[in-house]
Image (cartoon, rainbow, N blue to C red; front, side, top):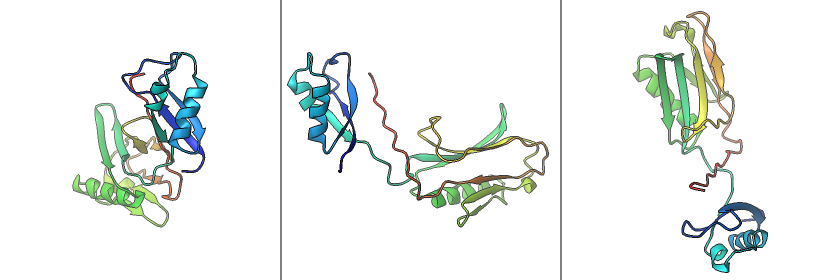
Length: 179
């Protein structure tokens, strides 16, 4: 990997060093990342702590696997939620969503792969209910691209959700647990 950000985490069995269990450094490789982490936190650091640390390159993700396309129709107790996860492209994700919604009796939902617009027409008989579409990672609140929410005043209102393009840089999300 070329010079870039690295997440360096001490092993779970190591004590904190200067109250630090992990840090982000910029380096050319994992060995340099560990050396930089140790150099930034030298006091009280046994050399083996940082030598045994895990260095993970922080990069953009290669595809949309692990991301979820979610559509919510309604609010509170009067709510229907549709979600699909595990597809490498947004086109595949949208296609799976169409299949799921059609199977639930919502035939008429369309997706245009050229414009990347997912359309929930007013003719679906959904009533005057809010509709929200979002793409998120691991059930989290972090969302990439547009979040479309339509406060529907009339049953005939439609909603169009423009999906982000597959060409965008897919955010990589790194979580350090148990700090």
